[in-house]
Image (cartoon, rainbow, N blue to C red; front, side, top):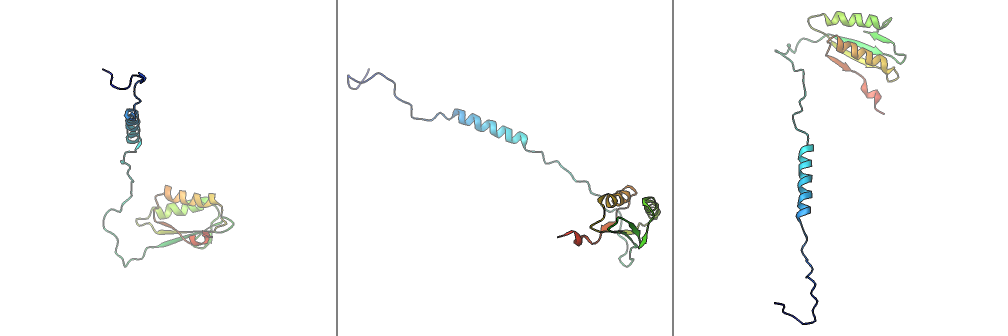
Length: 141
């Protein structure tokens, strides 16, 4: 039964509500993508922690100074070395000791990177882990 004016058109009424079903579908897809792409927090960092008791504090460790000048010449305790083979020989000698000394590496900022990297690689390969880079304040401009 049609109530209204006799001249009213028979067109259906316009729906004013927004259809939210597609919006919810998009939201759920985005939520699933977010859950899938979040990395799982299972990353671990391997640390070489000291084992045993620390040495007595009154014993001063031996310090070996390795200098590299602006011409990329390597010095061992202030004495110039002939080549990198001599450096490796000396590093092997101190690596064989029961207590390895502390190494203080002091490169000049004009030294070639390859020479400094070679010294660091040799110490790492021979198992010398107590090494410090001295004089790094010269690199800050």
